Length: 279
Image 1 (spheres, helix red, strand yellow):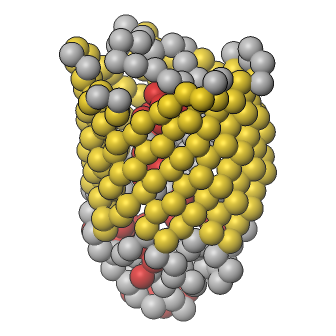
Image 2 (image 1 turned 90 degrees about the vertical axis):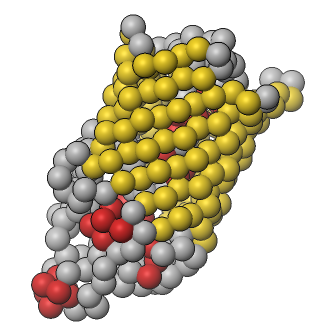
Image 3 (image 1 turned 135 degrees about the vertical axis):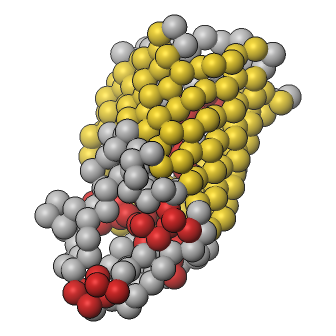
C-alpha cells in the first residue's frame, strides 16, 4: 500500500499546522491514494522522496501569511496481527500506533495512540516567540471508525490527550472518494473537525504571565469547528517511483483570533507536489 499526504509547512507555521484535519485524515487519504477497497489487506511500505509546498493562511507571528518549503519527506506503515505503526516526518502526528479491534462487513474500528512530536521550540523555530512558553505535542488516545458506503469511504475519529499537557479533545468526521483515469489515481475528501477549548487554549492561548513577558495581549482559546477539504492525484512514474500532487482548502474560524497570529485569515490553502520512491 502506498501512503502519502502533503502536509502543511513546518518551521514558522508549525503551531498552525499542528491542528488541521488534513493531518488527521492521513490514514483515510492513504486508502484513497492507494485505491484500496473494503476487501483489501493492509500492506507494509516505506516511502522516501523530495517535495515542495506553498501555503497561504494564518502564520504564527507573521504578517505575510505565506510560506514556501522544499525538503525531504519520509512516510511508512507496518502492519502485523491487527497491530499497525505509521510514521510521517512532516505530519502533526509523526508517530501513530494502533490496533484494529473490528474489521467486518465493510467497517473497521481501531484504537489509536499518537506519539509526541517536537512542538514549538524557541531555540529550534526561526520565529520571534520571546516570552511565550514552549508548546509540546501532546500524546493522544482514541478510537477511529472507518467504513465503505457505496463508492465513498467514511471515517469518524475521537482522540483525547493522555499526556496531561492540556486534557483536550479532538473529533473529526470525514468522507472521501477516489476515481481512476487510465493510470492516474485521483482522490478527494471533505470533513469537519472539532477541537475543544482546552486543546486550543494550550496551543493558541496567552496567559497573563506570557502577556507580561512577551507583549502579546492575554487570550483564552475557545472550542472551534472547521471545514477541511483536499483533492489530489497519484501518477506512477515507474514500478517504484510515484508523483503526487495535492491541494488543500479549509477554514480557521476561532483559531486565528489568538494574538499569536499577526494576520488573521479565516481560510487557508495549500498546494504541494512530491516525487517519491516506494519500497
